[in-house]
Length: 132
Image (cartoon, rainbow, N blue to C red; front, side, top):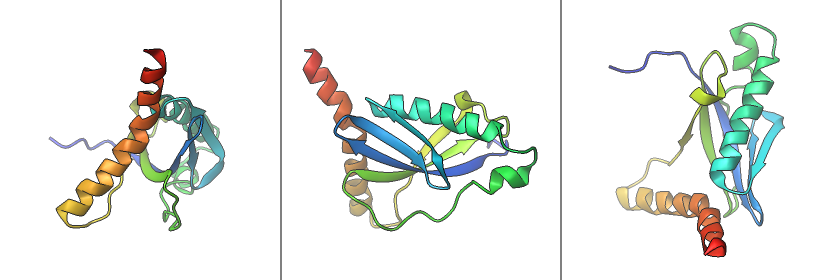
């Protein structure tokens, strides 16, 4: 059975930097997070988003004003976009990141997914190599 819980969606700009990752929310420029690994940046971004949303005025209109909008068109090789789904209680432990891939032939989808996987895993592999 499909999950019928109401969710809000927020566009996130993810950037791989020389020191890890930075995540900014497209419609909430003052909400950002950094981490040495992608997982760490996601963890902090959920906390930042939860804190920001919990301080908005009560009501769905205030929350939806910051939710999903058009994703920017310009991209660099180290930037990708994702959607963060949030439950109405803004609990960071219930947030989920969804990666976006454009509609394309299967070979193109595989290529894009591979590029995304390399961006997300690059820092983890570098850290593992440094620790061995």
